[in-house]
Image 1 (cartoon, rainbow, N blue to C red):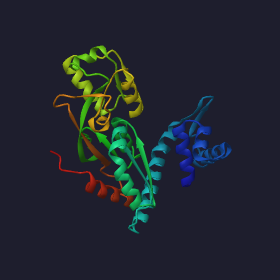
Image 2 (cartoon, rainbow, N blue to C red; image 1 turned 135 degrees about the vertical axis):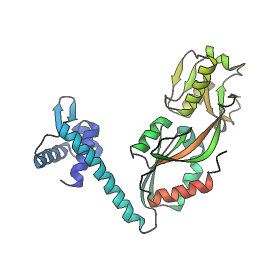
Image 3 (cartoon, rainbow, N blue to C red; image 1 turned 60 degrees about the vertical axis):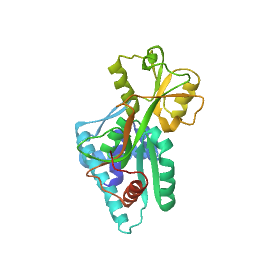
Image 4 (cartoon, helix red, strand yellow; image 1 turned 90 degrees about the vertical axis):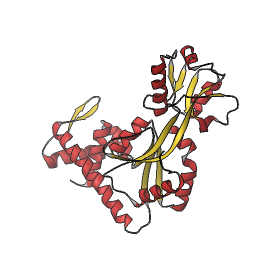
Length: 288
């Protein structure tokens, strides 16, 4: 059993399909099949149940999968640990952020970082806050910018700044109760800004006609301009849109903090260390 065998095995387990795993690994399908068969022969047990729809792990496969994930993680950490000895950040750095933070707050930070550290392969993923927290917990992201407080016992949270929320509409809103006759345009469930507005609406017994979900800021703003409904967004994103009306949310719903989260037990690579230093210099203030 070698590292490549375990990588192939975990990819098949995650994809639940040999052909999809082969495509993900840039291997020919027969090579993936052969490696799985050789691994099963070496261990003397079946690791997958085959069917017309794909493959699923056997009980032995489930056990091996837990160990394989730890082995691959430790291998990556060992590589990073060797690289850090040069004190030069290199290799991959995968960070997550909400769509709003990625669009508005991160470009200057990322430009400075990537210019200072050209050997770092920077990857930025955007998701809702709930998804980002889970990805950090699963070690699939080294860190993430999330909206709202995050008090998970396995995570460190670094406060960066507060964001002011506003309702965005085509025409002025007489009151919050105007939403009873309008559509709410929002990101999917798991968005902290949407959750904040939903808490307010529940408290005030406000029920929009429908909640329409979108994947990008541009799509939401475009649909608000077209008169499809009302959205909740960071004020700083939409403050320059003169054609839209901005209505502040009442206290204490108006401001939502942004945090940068990491796992407490995660290995801190040189790339992540330098990113954290730059983040502290450019973003962070003392939380009020």
